[in-house]
Image 1 (cartoon, rainbow, N blue to C red):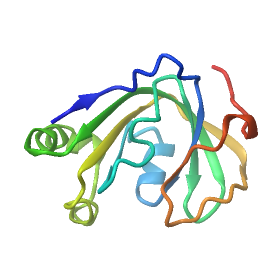
Image 2 (tube, rainbow, N blue to C red):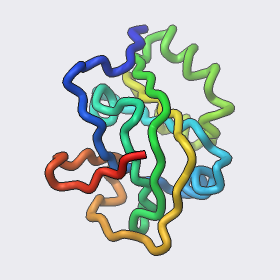
Image 3 (cartoon, helix red, strand yellow):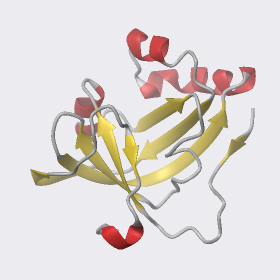
Length: 148
């Protein structure tokens, strides 16, 4: 297992958009689920590009952005035997269903994301992120960055 936090000294706090489906969206918005996981076969975002202090916009996969939070902590894992053992330790906090874990059995990379306090939007903001795409990190010049 290789476990790391992004260590790029050039990292500028960025803004990211993440799609959430139910039941995870409701759990995150209620403040019950504080640890998000993104598991993929290849190392794609947020793996290696997300860092503590970044702003995460929370998007309903079937609608708009409904809230945001600060990213408190990020751990990236390569999912060998030791990496999967780490995932096992965090499974209760991740709150994945059996269907979720079955769909992630072939994953080789994981990003664990600890979420700060949720700030709800008064009305959803439209953002064009297809429901089948889980993550976007738009160019910094094109996105509002909310400072905490």
